[in-house]
Image (cartoon, protein in one colour):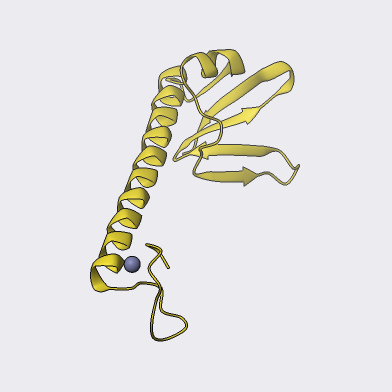
Length: 110
Ligand SMILES: [Zn+2]
């Protein structure tokens, strides 16, 4: 199935041989490791950007400034919604809150 070989045996058999299965698993592990490394790098970069912009643990910035530094809005580690419905995004303990007009509040979680 994976390599295009006709498979004999059980209907749920996915690989024609051990080496075929090993090749598949090695590639899968490699892809997974690459994906995880890329995401980890993006989170680390986001964290460093927030940390550098927010040394006093509370400030404001702009979307433009974040983007120019390479901030990637797709990657955060958690979301916190207040009772009033305000949504904070966190990268570990560094948080950001979208405000009006492409401004962002930056906060640090205690
Ligand atoms: Zn095969």
